[in-house]
Image: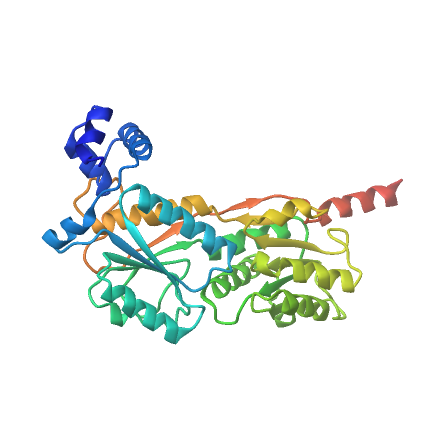
Length: 351
């Protein structure tokens, strides 16, 4: 059976360095690659059971997601699990199926399994209760949990929606609608807030008729879009809170005989495989899933190894800390520049 000493002999590194890598401690980047490749070639599997019995510590991480139907969640969890496994951590993965009672039961199960830490994608930022986990550290991702003492890793949703709305404004749009997810949902609410702030900053009156909720559902998004463009004064641009609603939105436009971007411009969130099948390339807010997953892993290392040498401030004890992952706006073909249209009209009138 391959041992840690075998890995050390082949890499030419000390057993202590190999141990530091496996336990998630600080190791030079070059050495990390060498150790990782050697471990994979040898098929080395650390035995943490004996160590756990001796030290009372565990190398198992619990992940509880609210759903797996989201492409973003499944891909992010894949990155997180892969990095944890590569550094010697076992993972217990559960889903709550967006049910609060199931979430409480799964949290209790993970706590009873003596996991070192719990990564939680909560059902609700206002109703999720993590009190049953006791002293086990909990890291909330892609959302936050109100009035509870836990660290969080989030995307900059407010700023993302603000910048998307600003892009509409810079392209001459003043009648900008917002196709929201679920009312009160953490992410959707933050994106709505960013949208509203942009309207206010650019002197555009907020119009309640331009905000509609579709619960991240394709059919509801189609119906909402049909209703939105049945108004006497329809918008020229729509910010869509999630690509889960994009197909429904496009079907709604088709039903109203509206074309992108000639009649309607749009910006959505996150990338997905089917974008390449669309005739018009979407403009969208890109959420870097790999960067997000790596940020989660790095934060876990900070929590589990508070004495490790990291450039960023440590997360100690139970003091909650929120970290934001930056997004970027990917420019496609789905936003029409009305400013250019105005210029062309002036030229035509002159000549």
